[in-house]
Length: 167
Image (cartoon, rainbow, N blue to C red):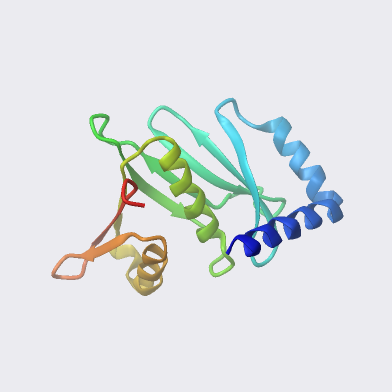
């Protein structure tokens, strides 16, 4: 596993060195970051390199993917702190433009990492009836990251939860 991770990092560094347009984009992105926004890393989905950024506001955390492809609508996870007495963060929304290229996995990996760094105890969220046509994909996605997934008796809505203290 460690060797795999090292090889992955070497591959990303080589791709960045070879791709001058990506390096130029990365430099422009660094110059245009908002005050509360920071670059967390560079990852590779199935198609290309993406830059992972974090933006924190009063009650929200945004993990976003940046690349020349995602100028208008960036893939992102939005986390919302609804109750200031608890150390829980709710996934308000996950938006990805393309399915099955790894963007959702990259986003969730960084979202969990940031939630732990920010000392949250739990990540939770809802699975809406709107997503019913791809619940099987959502269940697989959340379980891959260790979330507990449950549905009501009528199977019209679901909930997810990840205890960060036990991970």
